[in-house]
Image: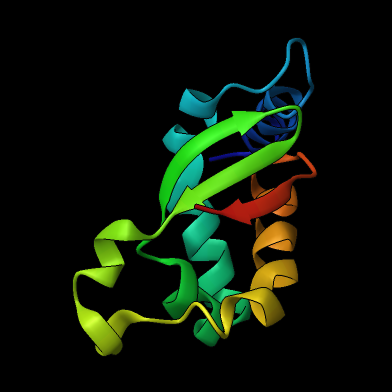
Length: 107
């Protein structure tokens, strides 16, 4: 790929981050694996704490995560006490990947 093609790819992804309309939950879901990849590369412990979260809702900048499925596994997947300390790492991963600031709450 020559430099012109690379430049176009970079510009395309930067334009994709421009907010033309409010972000919808489906848009966040579509990029969630990339968010988790970014989180894992920066903080593996945070990735372990959040990888099994289900995106429940997104309203007015508040992303609600549901961990009811992970609680079925009892203690081996229970990180509810650790997650508040790791929340900022997830917020940074979301901002760097999707380009939005979010407040995160658990259901």
